[in-house]
Image (cartoon, rainbow, N blue to C red; front, side):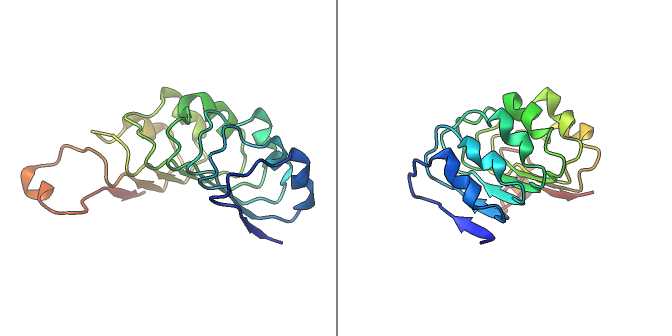
Length: 170
């Protein structure tokens, strides 16, 4: 099995169950109201994409750095997620290139975001940014930045258009 979608299940999973999914490349635990991320997920060595959107956790487990092949992480709609406190864990993921932090109520980026310099894509849409966050300057490998549907102060003429947003390719 390469893909496993356990979204909207309200699961209470035993950490030992993850050992059975050694070839798993995609895992969705979206909207499962998880207060903690199961430690056993860290054993999924082949995992490439992980969707943890719509949950209730604040921090990622320190063992998360074992996900050495993780390339894309979804943390959308995670209102309790403490982005700044998790940067040290995220920065230890050697192949993580794409991060989705959409609709999380962010008003600014953490000052230590420069530690995520390996990121190529950053999705920050549907947050509370009023200006393009200057902290992105520290993301030297960034090729794509999605900032649509934020609270940007845009001239009235443009403001009348619906669906306005900012997507930047470098």
